[in-house]
Length: 52
Image (tube, rainbow, N blue to C red; front, side, top):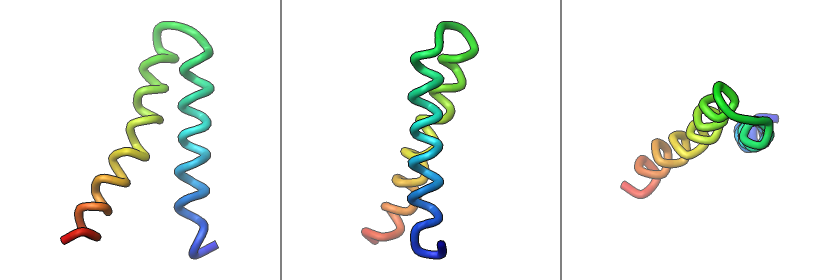
């Protein structure tokens, strides 16, 4: 779980965000943006550290 914990968590967050996006308008789209933005934030944050 130490190796696969974060990738599994990010994939679950992405799936939740995609499901929220197809649920409807209003608060669901706002929540989908939040859930889909978090994996991108994590990739950028740790990608910059990795490439330096």
